[in-house]
Length: 258
Image 1 (spheres, helix red, strand yellow):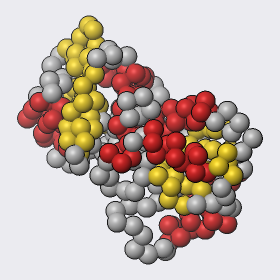
Image 2 (cartoon, one colour; image 1 turned 90 degrees about the vertical axis):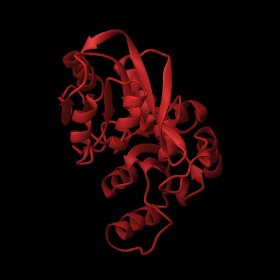
Image 3 (cartoon, rainbow, N blue to C red; image 1 turned 180 degrees about the horizontal axis):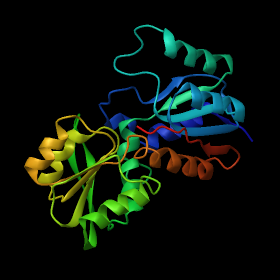
Image 4 (tube, rainbow, N blue to C red; image 1 turned 60 degrees about the vertical axis):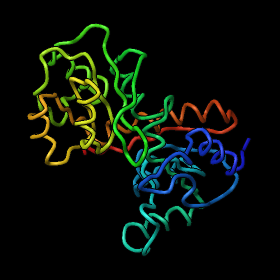
């Protein structure tokens, strides 16, 4: 049984508390298509490939972490952006995006998903200011792990069994407290150290991060931008399936090594 677009988007806007955030992108509905929603797909980024898969699956709504609109809005509609919008509008598909709210959320977010995948304890602390929000999440293992084993946990829990993209092993030999911030959050490395973390995990790194990790004597792990940001979209799919039982909901992965 279809549901109204405003009911789904309203639920997401409220649940993810989008009003709390001063984001790099507008959160919520970015492209309006049909208002009757029977099938939803979630994903990391609103690429042409993901939109094409949504068309193949007959989706009416795409919910992503990285939408199409950034900054103050659309300055021009050309190139890849124009082609993506054409695909959405020609197929009457709506698109909603949730950026920082989907990193931060205590139940559905990318960071809590990573923490759970690593088996960190339930006592967790926020750290690291990003536009007025403590975006990072720190947790500890009950028993400290040797650094190689800790990196192995990241490989198994976040990187699908593959080694992380980069490891700067400058921290203690035993790792207990771990700081997490998905995506491109290497600027939270120093706040993670101030929060007492022995290791900091993010997706991708700025050039300056390697030297800083060495100077701060902390282990820095880059697990991949997309690899750290599938957790929120997957959890959103599960949550929407429960909230709207008459709607088909599916997380759709799109391969990206970055």
